[in-house]
Amino acid sequence: ALLIGSVSKLGFVWTLADTMNALMAIPNLVALLLLSGVIVEETRKYLWSGNLDKSEDEITETIA
Image (cartoon, rainbow, N blue to C red; front, side, top):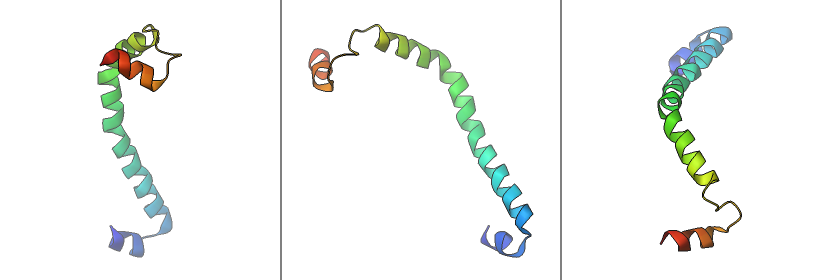
């Protein structure tokens, strides 16, 4: 990668960097879609648990 970046034109290097960043985002987006049901379920459980106004110590006491 270092060799490609040092001997290539600047426009190509930026295009390559943008493409690699986009390719890294794809697995994360797929995981978000696959886990969206779990995220919604856990968020609803938390919001309706009544723990929103409690401190972290109070919440851990009720769990333990």
